[in-house]
Image 1 (cartoon, rainbow, N blue to C red):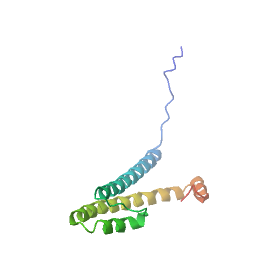
Image 2 (spheres, helix red, strand yellow; image 1 turned 30 degrees about the horizontal axis):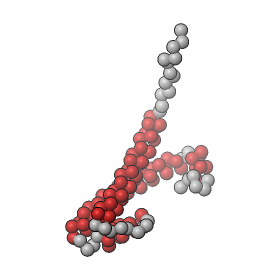
Image 3 (cartoon, one colour; image 1 turned 135 degrees about the vertical axis):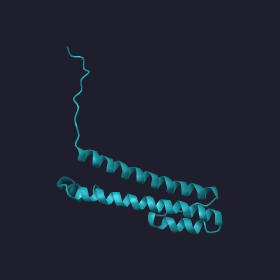
Image 4 (cartoon, rainbow, N blue to C red; image 1 turned 90 degrees about the vertical axis):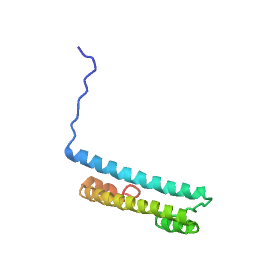
Length: 119
């Protein structure tokens, strides 16, 4: 009798789980990094300070100059910027591991050569 209750289970390899975990951790670090950037922008907005559209490299300097007038906000922003820098450093570390893994795979190397799909 067929009931439809059975589904075939596919056992994945250890390498699959390791790669999935690496990508998940990298994604989580990036999300927390962006959360911190948004929290910094929101905190400055409370003091009626709005940052212009700045890139990732100029963000820290823009925040420091914007918060330089008030000692308390400068101290708070320094703590947040330090945490942001630590998250970005660890994200880049995991990203480099991903790039090394991808560089060993022929199919992934071909995808990286395509504009707007690779690095």
